[in-house]
Image (cartoon, rainbow, N blue to C red; front, top):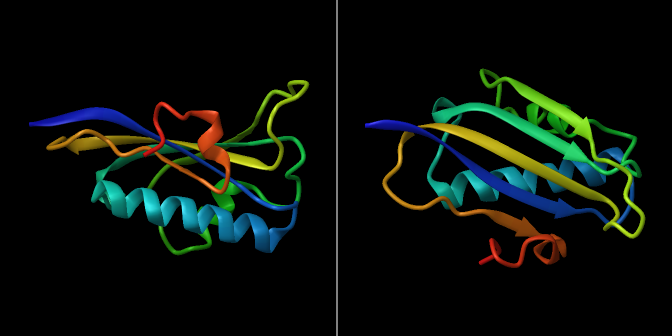
Length: 121
């Protein structure tokens, strides 16, 4: 039986730059797909967000540049600018529509584990 559920994740970069964002998004998404055993065919849509200090590349465009996500609707938004919030963060919400045979594995990397220690494994 198919069902809809979401997988969350986040990663940080050292600084703003196209290469840094591309590398971070590729690392985050390939790890998330692998740990959850999913492919693009399993994904309904993906929402990325990035902090205001990441301006050189859209995270959705970075994912598309990996060759994955060609048939997946992607959307990217800017995070609210909150005083004291972690900097250089890319977050993702992957909405999956397929048979769920195990609990989702949420992926937090590069210091982003501090955002959700309850979901980081």
